[in-house]
Amino acid sequence: MTTTLIGPNLSFIRRAFLRNKDRSRLRRERRARRQLRENTWRDYAVLSIPYLWMLLFFLLPFLIIFKISLSVTEIAIPPYSPLVTFEEGAMQIILHLENYTSIFYDEDWTYLRSYLKSVEVAGFATLFCLLIGYPIAWALSTCRSTWRNVFFMLVIMPSWTSFVVRIYAWMTILKKNGLINDVLIAMGIIDEPIQLLQTDFAVYIGIVYCYLPYMVLPLFSALMKVDYTLVEAASDLGCRPIRNFFTTLVPQTKNGIVAGAMLVFIPAMGEYVIPELLGGKGSILIGRILWQEFFNNRDWPLASAVSITMLAILVIPIIWFYKIQRREEKA
Image 1 (tube, rainbow, N blue to C red):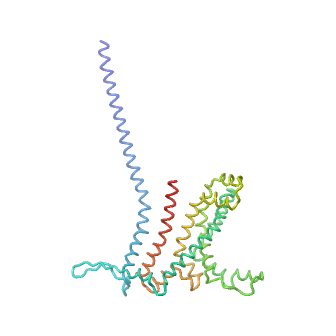
Image 2: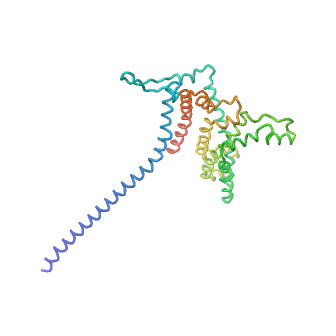
Image 3: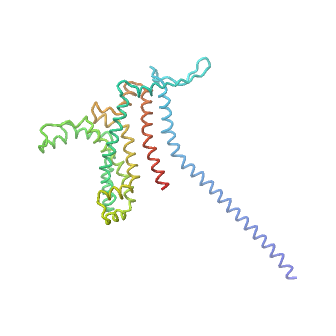
């Protein structure tokens, strides 16, 4: 009798236990799926913020400028013709390409010369920033941690002052009765003041001074990840210092060099304030051309075409940098 009573009770208890176990497992699975959906939507929301930012402040203005570049100048508000017109119930889309052809077929080659001059100035300024910024970044990466913050402050502190104020300060330093000429005359190196302001030399000084921190910071980040045991091993094997630098240290900081060069070259390419205040009349860079076409000549379509062409030129180093990054990731 006892066996017949206990057997069914045990089986009932076992089935009830299994049902409860299945219910708890289903509840855990539902909770995990709910948490996964919440995390997925949260991730999508976080990732959508930079894409929305790029859409509003890059892609949308780019499309507006591109639309203006396909129109012609008119005496109206705004000063360009519409692309879409309606006449007798028919919609017409009129695209004008003469703004782009006038850039490359200008009689004086003004725009092409300004592009080449901008590339030249931005390229040399980037090279000077690299030559000056690499030793600074190396000193920051190898100095004591107690002094590192102080040196960082010295590098970044000029950026706390207004950009235009710093350029005006350089104007007072470089003018004929400025600090540099006074020091050179006092030392007997020159007899009369030399022309430093309104020259390409002044433009290079202004660009290097303003954009040097953008080169130092990526280089510092790359130098902090360098494996110095390779440098020491190469030195122990008899490698000369210069060859050791270019064969062991520079390849390990290649990403920092490329990133710093991009951060300096791209804004320097379209710089307007520095060439306008420090450069002479001969330094016709693309930024000054854009200002003249937009505000002096009020030729918005041509200025838009010039800016779109400049953006197409800047896309080349961006794609090159992207390919280098992909190659490094695959390696």
